[in-house]
Image 1 (cartoon, one colour):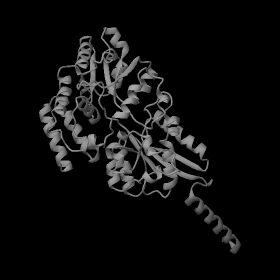
Image 2 (tube, rainbow, N blue to C red; image 1 turned 135 degrees about the vertical axis):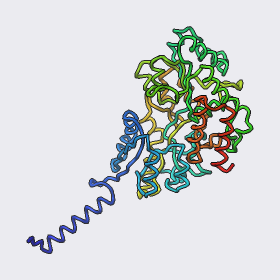
Image 3 (cartoon, helix red, strand yellow; image 1 turned 180 degrees about the vertical axis):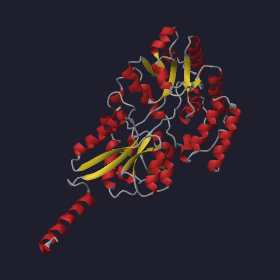
Image 4 (cartoon, helix red, strand yellow; image 1 turned 135 degrees about the horizontal axis):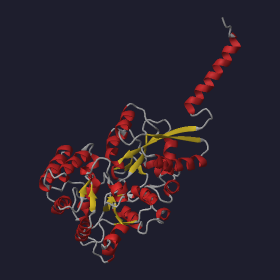
Length: 425
């Protein structure tokens, strides 16, 4: 039998207390430990890590661990963790479910900290249209980590090969509109190619609607689709692109065949996306360029939807101050410069550093300019994201139309009814 003795027991107790104190305060080396959850492929995770490393270099007393979560199931896993009182100290949040987290009081208000001297950034550094669902009245619950305004990509070599006038040539003449879009996609079709790939996503549908001066919601967030003829005309135009063969529906493509693969293999002349496809096309050596969304209003440009994610702080973390400080760095000019310099998968959400992405391709300024006039999901003009599940329900209805199983008129009627039922409008 071991005889510990009073002195040995005292020393053991002292060591145990020290270990417990270190475990509660952070890591064994005395650093404050934070965790940040995010989705992303391996290349994207490396981009996130750049800003984390830059912050830790400036703050050697802080250690931050990036916790990757697969994009499929990310929302459900995050909500499950937060509902149970767990989760990382900070995390990426999709615009489509930000409002659900705000209503559940699971993410921390940030306005006071962002306006303090401790913050690396200020709310005024971001275009108003980017806040979307992350801003409720005057309170901020998440900051856009970057932005991805929608533009169209076109394959320069394919247009040259087929002798087709390019979108840029139409744009330079002030004629880049729906008629011109219909012309070039018709000529691409005659050349044995697909003109365009249309998706069911609400950010693409709404961008078409806005390009015609229409809207599902007005500037105050009131439902107007049922009486907005311009919006209804745009939905009919989208349907006509599929029915007339000017575009193919992404949801009807063979499994494993996406718009990015079709663009890389020169099967299609034009697609729509944010900056997230740029690194892939650059690496593959594709000769492409951007062009703004074609309009039908007589104006050179109209707003587009800006897909974005937000970084938020867990309301349950006991390290709120350090988490907010890191958040403010991650989304600041310095943090975004660390992440997005060169050919990245997004453009800055913060103003004043556009030069870090303005080297490829020639007209990347179309993307940065669209950020200043567009709207993120959850903004009054794109209000559906404020109602959990509504975006998915609407996209399911557009899917049926794009598959040729419902008319535009039937689709509008069902979309309006769905919005009214889900929002009590």
